[in-house]
Image 1 (tube, rainbow over the protein chains, first blue to last red):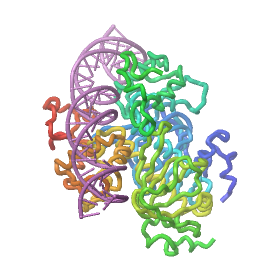
Image 2: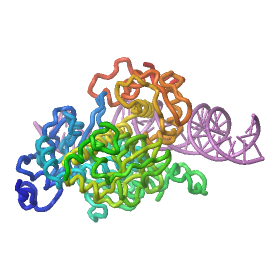
Image 3: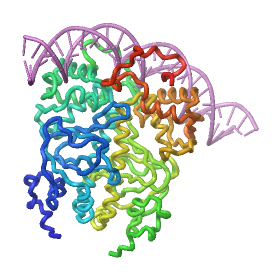
Image 4: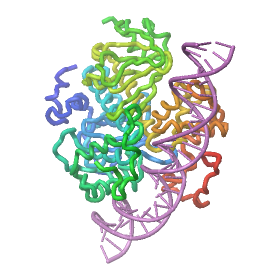
Length: 260
Length: 260
DNA sequence: CGCCACTTTGAGTAGTGTCAATGCTGGTGG
DNA sequence: CCACCAGCATTGACACTACTCAAAGTGGCG
């Protein structure tokens, strides 16, 4: 096979060298197909026959799982560069449902080609392994959020996770999720999410017009301390000496969180 | 390279054809080292320099993440055949801590060899991708458990997850975790886990001597219905007509769960 | 303009967490 | 051999978070 076909410069689909890993995969022999989705469009549905997998190039996509009883949960948001629909190769169906949140574009690649490519090109294999590891890492972080954080901590870390990079100065962020969807992602109810965000707004930590749209972080430092669960009374202080000032007084009415 | 080196029959470390995928990886050129761990032994610690990765051959290993404040959480249990310590390849440190729960044996493989192998042997690459996908799948299932289940449902599904195969008749299971560890895995407290299990015992759903050791499932059907959250009042009935018999009566004192 | 979906707010409560005390078990040393 | 001890598990009382149900507010779109 002609090695040059794998060269980034030969990529017909991916701009420049952005998403180099992604490029390697989706630009292979030309069997990938570019495709666009409107907000709300279904890329694939859990349980339906898996034929293609996707590489997200632009936009945001939510991944949902459905329980037997109809309860559904968002298990993650896909960001550009991420793979979508990569199941265990033996699995004949998609494990989850993928729905576009914003206008999104993807490279669509037949599954059997994936196997081909992995078997013939080691660079792509390594890329794939890296991407899966990143996804695993993200999922584990979410695991910690769901298992060990309070509602306030959950919402705070969610908002922070919207910042594309850690030390971004930009604080005006797109919020492509409804309250319902945020609640589903964080394992909360709509009402709780709404209340926490209303409280953040009152305390001037964030500024958010209602509903889907945008959100602005006003006080990033406080948000970070809330997200990391500074000042909790519980497990955190197990081996360290207990707070000498006695048990925390009943909290003031106006705020869901203690003073900072 | 000699293709026969990859043959399962040539595997010096792995018995028979058990864990065929695992075999492919850990039996490569002989740079894997067999190693044994006692219960409680640390395979690797989060944040320490990642040099090797592991393939678990026997025993059970817990994977833990540590938050900034010292709160820790178990993010999963590793079963034989599973990879341990495979980070994003760029990451210079382990993302989590791995501790043996039972007497365990692993194949230990230097990281740079992993890259070599992936680049030179496509069958191994595919195996690796499959294994990572399985891990992702397991992690997502846990995500759903943490985000959308009640304490009773969590404990019930945990107990069921101890069964090695879905339709195993064997109901006497090893329970290598303390109550503390179960709580950490499920995002609960020790007390809640203890209470739920005590309740299951009273209702003759399980039989468990106290503490680390074994657990026996007496009524698998009930356990499964509890795990799947049959009879809940909430989200489940959103689009279906609401229960006509009115809101659920206050539950009886003696049991944490409604009648079945 | 009115409908519809989404969000916000409020009141009340179920379910877990927290704290504290007690029980059980296996190991150790007198 | 038994008493003691340390560690884990259990149980109870209580507090508080987050859920439930209900109702009103807001905004977009035909």
